[in-house]
Length: 379
Image (cartoon, rainbow, N blue to C red; front, side, top):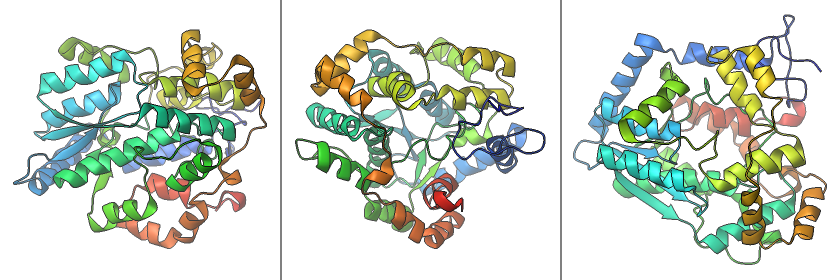
């Protein structure tokens, strides 16, 4: 097994390549991002200048910025950072009805202590269970993509309602890493096509990110998404300690374990059905940023992912699977988004448009690189 000489990505990672020194292309991408997003004093000045421009845009309005919150470490810190920068944030939360108690309490503690208002969209619990079940029957890895898109759409809905031009996302490539191309895919048409085929009810309450709405929000309304952590020397362990001390925030046990569908997906479904372990992303990122030793990461990745069997019982019950039915679903031949209707070909055809939108700061570069690329020819 060939392993990157710098991080812990190996040859099983999709679209991985190695240079003569054995360093993978994902490490080189991270190096470029480090150049594009400087930290230290320079990064802080960039953030402060950005905050001043956001304040000017928010003049005469109740809020300056939307911050997506989940109760997790990164999004909780985003609210703290906003207050440090003198911004007036509106917290936005998408509730798929599978939140952990710890996550809910974390949101309440941080927003309450900082005096931040909360905008929440709650999907119908039976509807979301039907969508989640549909994706399991479709036998694809992207079973929680409806939550990811629901979260993104909720951010836009909050921004649109209050005339806010900026959305802050709590993501750092230095701690979460770079998700390999080909592991996951999501778009609104994909959600609909899978649910139309395998679902048993209409989608009425899921906020789905339809292409025409997204283009309007991005290009016409000029609502932009920014990841402030890219300009910070973000130390995850130190941040957890600070949040605990200042707000009574609690750690929920692991990356994305604040929500139970994410926990089930990442710690049970993906490793057992597709051999995908998201710790490769997280650990490799921490190694690159000097927050974890490479030898430590190589040893830690051998340990089984933490999982509570009570959650498996809950999943079966809420999705209406008997033990036998669940086992049959887990044994279905793996499929991918290519087996269903999606926007992928549309994104590829609109590649020049999206490149222009990237240049004018209307869509993130990460979207362009992931969704407009034709994977088959490597372009």
